[in-house]
Length: 436
Image (cartoon, rainbow, N blue to C red; front, side, top):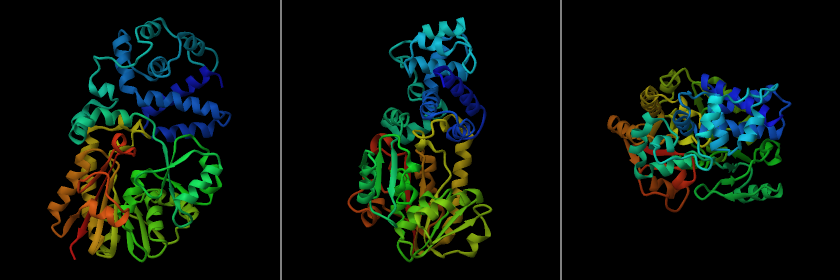
């Protein structure tokens, strides 16, 4: 593909992402499945163009409004602005790409040329930019993010706007971290140990993961370090009865099965039978043989009442705003709406109120989100404890020493990890225990 054809593909995909509700990575993956002629370099270039726009959309829109003399933002204008401000293309490069030939974008109009000329050539940021533009997040989220991050807001938003490394978890059912690390190095892959998770490995380059024997044989799984830590803090032990109440595609289910050494009973629940079905291959590959999958009609499914007080550990990785995952899913920030926070916090409360019924006396409920918002995190646990006097907060430092060992990275009784401070996705974990 020519550079112009790659840009044209990216513009079309950006338009599709903007108009749809599907995640950007799903939309892009579908395109590549349908256009198998696109080579590795084509795919990398198209993806690079798309994510340059998604990561910097607020900044690009601000410059379009400032320099565009009435031009409004759309996929084409954002791509032009991103090529100049983010990817630093020259005007000649853009003119060659936007020449109107077959498979390439139409020629740059006089109005677009004037807009580009009014933009800086060496810096995308400007002293007049408000914080939400410099930080590339929706303006309505500012009070939520400020309340959660305080003086670290700008630093954390900058980190969230960058690319995440690839984190892997060594599957303790088949190997350990040192052996997995050695196997990756034999493949010529640069890899480092994660600082918080004793099972984690971090890769800073793009690798053909699905083609590696170590992956195909289930020795490693993709899982962000924060998510690994959350699963370890569940303290799921061999012989226990454990429920993963919002299991999704099974990432944490796999980690819990490994912690239990395939001994005991692990139930993966979700309201989407399709998501649970997609976990089948992952479970088989990892050798997780103790998992029972249970589709639920909702958080008040009769299965919960039938199994009340039957579990030592109940893990709730609740549906959330996903504000902690913007490094991986920058498009998610632009799909989020104010009403979503209200609806999600109500759903989280309902899930917690139902899931707690499964916890036996002396058992624990582990609540986790990939959100940075207090409304979904600390406030949710405070509400829960106010409504359920039979539960008490288990200080995270105590749980950390029992499970991971040593001291946690922060002294709070509930754990909040962030990309700038901890190098992970934004993540929250709290552990509450039913009084014996």
